[in-house]
Picture 1 (tube, rainbow over the protein chains, first blue to last red):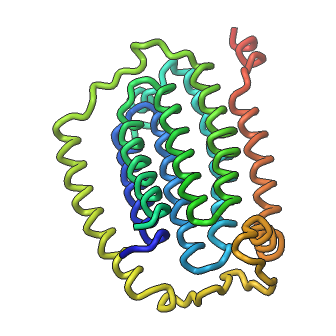
Picture 2 (cartoon, rainbow over the protein chains, first blue to last red):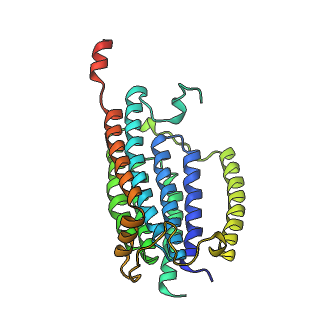
Length: 101
Length: 189
């Protein structure tokens, strides 16, 4: 029988999988950023489970730092989306091919 | 099966299913609302893992602050419906998803089994020992916030201070990136 944090690691893996699918298969930049938030949440869940498994507070402190980095990422990413929509009038990743990526 | 394990499993399965619902929405606002539900469920899971500070921070910072910024930008963009073209998942994408889920579940199960069976001791992490040194004393597990504070402001003080600089830089950068360049447009015209 799995304990709570061990089970949580599997849930975090599944959440990360779904978020990765969202980043890969959605062409809309807004949805890609929302999926990145799922990825960060899955990582946070893994950190908290690891904190419970090791019996230390390291995981929870790092989880707080990940949260701060997620806030920075959201601020910068959404500012970039606004700037892109102003210049290209589109937030589809396929329409942003000035660099021929 | 005790109640906390049962509710943990129910919350986890609901969160995974809702994230599947989220990435297939057509409208960004409904996706953002589903994401708030996912974050609230994760906060409940943190609470069951006795990470009470993490649960509160998840609700306040994530479901509160970050998602408000998301919803605000979605409203600000005011996308016309024809911008939100999403025709569902194609056959090629379905095959790709199936193959990658197969590989990922196989890999993840192997890694997870190794992690859970050999235990953390083989990775050089002893039970109850902080990676960052950990010379401070821990309070009882019921006083989660005290424990987090003792770790964050003693072991991780420099990281904490540097994170505040990062947030400051991000705020300034966001303002600079998103502001209207009216002077340049006037020059061009």
